[in-house]
Image (cartoon, rainbow, N blue to C red; front, side, top):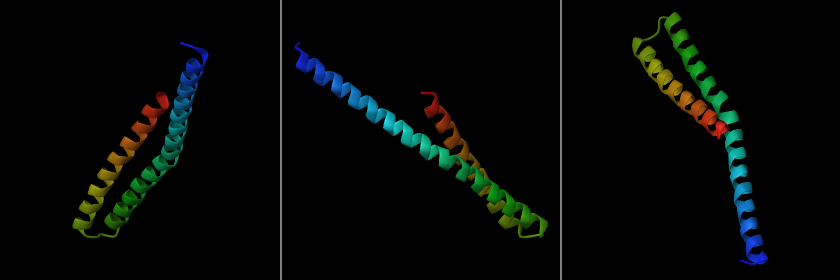
Length: 89
């Protein structure tokens, strides 16, 4: 193998590593902003459920808000675990 082929292979490997690092950086930024939004949504739904309960609101509304809270908590946990997994790589 001559130097031209080695150089092309090295450049290709370098380009793929740079692209991979750029993707990881974009994912880190994405998760950096997405995790607090997910936690904030959980907090808002929890607060809405508490307000509904204190005001003596409908039981159906309480159940609906509880379901949404559980779903949003699941999504928030998935987001945070994905961010931790990607950060450890």
